[in-house]
Structures are given as C-alpha cells and as structure tokens.
Image 1 (spheres, helix red, strand yellow):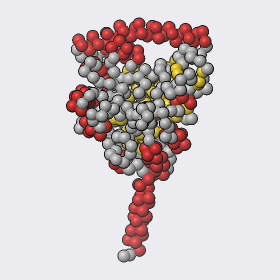
Image 2 (cartoon, rainbow, N blue to C red; image 1 turned 90 degrees about the vertical axis):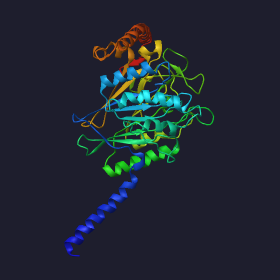
Image 3 (cartoon, rainbow, N blue to C red; image 1 turned 135 degrees about the vertical axis):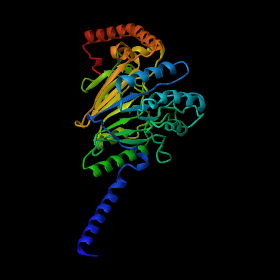
Image 4 (tube, rainbow, N blue to C red; image 1 turned 45 degrees about the horizontal axis):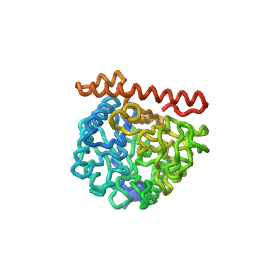
Length: 400
C-alpha cells in the first residue's frame, strides 16, 4: 500500500471511528422520526390539536371544524396530544380514529401523536393497539417505542433547514402516562427523563451546539404551581391547588404570562424530574400540553415557557369561546424562538376567510351556531375580566 493510499485509508478510518463515537450518543434511530424540513420560505407551522374526546355525539362537527382549521392554517405538521378518541372498545375507537385521521390523510398533512390519561384507561385495549391504529395511515409520523421506555409514544422529530442540511429544531414527544398506582395523574417517568438527557447531550455533541427544542405531551408539569403566585384566599381568577386543599394560585406578576387561567392546572402528583432536566440542559424553549380543557395560557419559568392549549372539539354551547386550537410558527432564520397564538372557535367562526371555506349548508349552519353561542359567552367573560382588572388592578388576561 503506497503512502497516499495509506493516508487516505487512515483518514477514512478516523472519520469512521469519530462517527462511531458520536452516533451512539444521538437519539436512538428507532426513537427518531424521519427528519422534516422547513418550507422554501423558511417557515414551519404546527397545528396543536388536543383533547378532541371524539364520540358519536360530537365527532362529525369536531372533525369538520378541525378540517376547516387545517384549510385555514395550512400547517406543515399536526401535533395530537392525547385524549383523542377514547371509546369503549377498540373497534369503536378505530372508527373515531379513522374519522379524525381522514382529515389529515386527505390533505397529506403529517401527524404526530402522543396519548393522554383517557386514551386507554378502561383496560379494553392498550396504548400500543391504539398507536397501531394511527400508524396505519401514511400521514402518521408517530413512533411506538415498544419496551424501550415507559408508556407508548416517546420519540423525537428532527426539523432541518429547508435545504435538508442543518438541524434547526428538535421536537420532543412524550407519553406523560395516565394515572399512578394511587389514582393521581401520572407524569413522564424516570427512564423517559434519562432518555431525554442522553439524547439531548448527544445532539449537542454531534452538532456542536444545543438544538432549540419544543416539547409536546398531554399532562402539564408539576412546576406550573411554582410558576404561579400563591394567594392567602380564594380571589377572582385564582384556583385551588389540585392536590392541596385551601391553597390558591393565580398568575404571578413576576413572570411573563400569556393568555388566561380558567381552571386549576392538573399535573401529575409525583415529580420525576422532567422539568429540572430540561431547565438544566437549556435546549427547550417551550413545553406544550393539553389535559386542562379551557386553559389557554403560558408562563415563562426558569427560561422555559410552560404552555397549555385548549380542547380542540365541538362541545355544544361551551365550544365557542372556551375551545379551539393553537398555532406554533417557526422560522429557520430565527431558530432561538417561536411564535404562537390561540384560536377560539368563536373567533374562528367570525373570520371572513374561514367563512369563505364553508363548503355546505351544514358548514355555514355550524359556524353560525358557534357565532350565536359565543356572542353571549364572550360578553360575560370580557365583562368579568374588565371588572376584576378595573377594581383590583390585577391583570388576569394577557395577550395570547
């Protein structure tokens, strides 16, 4: 072997060894979805849909509203974060899953799924069986992590530059469980936290920097109560701690707040260190959850936005101003941030661009019904907010 060939061989061997040192530290391939890309305009839009609770009495109107939202927002990815179609049997659940997934399949919109506390709570079927239902559709990018981690559906989605090169963002998806052995809400488990730590560190080593990340899961983290302000008694727009009676919490003026707190947050009872790990790693910009149906708010705490999104379903006369969806916009030229907004069904139905998308009399009647219901709901909500803020000087609703 001549000197030139030896040099080339040595260089290739060194590169291979270096790659071998880096690759194991990255997210395991079987827990990493196929990389997605920013659009040619450098933008990427996520539609956050959660807590659809699809049943026979609401599935038609709920899926039609979600379809109209897809047409209006044109998302690049739909995030489904649990409590989606919890019917009594797997066969019934399959029908609801089909009604929901056909919305995205027909529009060729990629979909990522994680589960909530209701998705398999009755014991008639497993999370793995339900994940198989979603993964039967070509639009699903979801991963069943098998026996690797607690639960079903903990994985990551890489988001690369529009040219397919540099990794710009990382989207973490967690199964936050259902209930612990004592009947409390569950939380992301220790092995999932350790997987995040190792994977996050591996991504940093491989890319030479921390990768800005967003987290999606169903149940909010216990630290939400640390981010709020405790009051000595019940006051307007303050809510009792879910696990500690007689302790009331509301927005704290010391933190950056978004939206409005409409019910007490419902985290898991035991804390397995997920939020601490993410605060220590310093790569997570925001955590997006559902679970608490009417809460559409965010609080910046220890450098991370703890964000809750409202239920995305039609629910009769409570749907207009309390339910809707969230949009998250990313820009590959500004990877250290994101933009988000909440769209409530009442505002959605009053948008002239949305009304132009109505394809049938049923669509127009549905939007008209929402506008009628929402007018009165919005009036009383706005009056309550104005009254409290005017007479107490305390802000209870912030820009979304």
